Image (cartoon, rainbow, N blue to C red; front, side, top):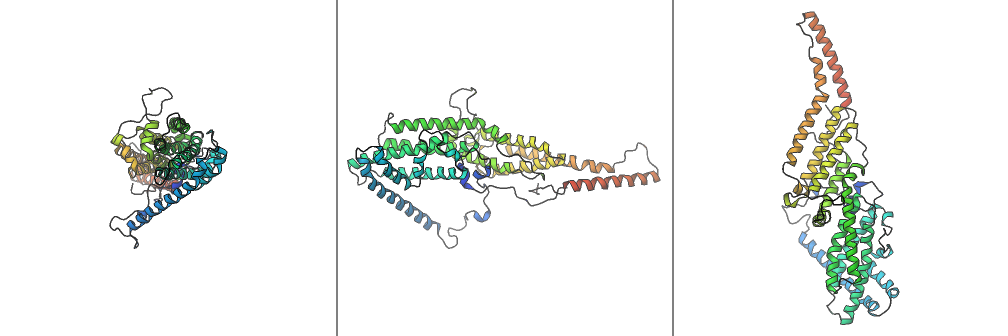
Length: 434
């Protein structure tokens, strides 16, 4: 039998990578958060105070910090408004705009290519671009809240200057969105496009209504073009997802039958896809465009409006694992490998929000598969060993012959048993309960 070792499946723990963008790197663990926090990390529901700290006091302090931060940005805004109230050109406003954006930590957007041809984002490390996307989204939300207070203690001319500042800021912030849309197709680009699509589709229309930007306003037109580019980019990546599952992750097979690292990677990736569920449904769903070759993958009806795409991609991952298992040297090891990986997939699905999008009977089907893998392992690894004890003669042997035959059978059995144990000594069963 394989040596039972309490080896936990590798789990990705870096939440910073949920918005990774670089298409040149294959280190997928960078954007898969750990879906299973340890018990000690879980908040306790039995007590409202932990380690002598009242959580309500933390919330109060956090709210106060947010208000102080917004007030600080408002003071900066008032100081910069004179630069946007004069009829000076864009050159005179460049330095104040840079200081305004730098105050939110996103002054680097001005260095991106305004045409949206990548803007250098494709040359940045995956984690750095992901960090910039998060900083960009946070800055855009804060900026919107600051602009929302424009009528308080502002004159008419100041409101007009604020509109100019908002338009300049919005145009600069759109550069990142266009750069994301221009990245090379990759799994991380899909997540990035969805992450950027949400604030662009929500915050910019609010700014448009706030400052009465009509459809012909440069910012409104740029927003429409950018959203269309993000949708096209996401749909292109969506069409490539099945190919990504087969080829994007390094498929080096573990020789002990343990859980393949790609399982944690892709199951975490599928969870990240569902983070922006409404946008995912709109971007990748069929919107009456027909069933042509360029149509995005279908989103089937299911529990909670579930996505058929999710279960289809999980099935694709399982199929690839089955195909790759043929590279393992021993038939019994293939069964152990599939047993471990099927259980890992099932647990990651049912212990996360992915369970809301699984069809009825999905778990039962995997349970039946695992029972089949266990039987297949026994048949491939131990039935041939036990068969050495069977007497193959057609007639009843004499006592002498029976002793000789028994001795021969036992010798063959012990030899086969030793060979099987030697071969399976390094095989791993991360979940010995199975």
